[in-house]
Length: 78
Image (cartoon, rainbow, N blue to C red; front, side, top):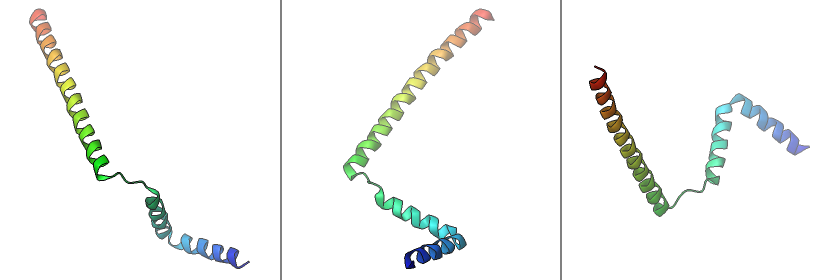
């Protein structure tokens, strides 16, 4: 009986201050997170930078090709 009364009191307390309950939940969940090691973090960062550069190069090439095509079409059409 004491446990259920304690839970009821905790529920009422959380209703009065829902922000505190939320932050407690965040704290509990953050303890469950498996953080990457320094080596993993560096590897992931390098992979993201390389992937960004590759995509940027693909877009730049496509932009140049389409620009030349449109200039060619503009010269032909008038």
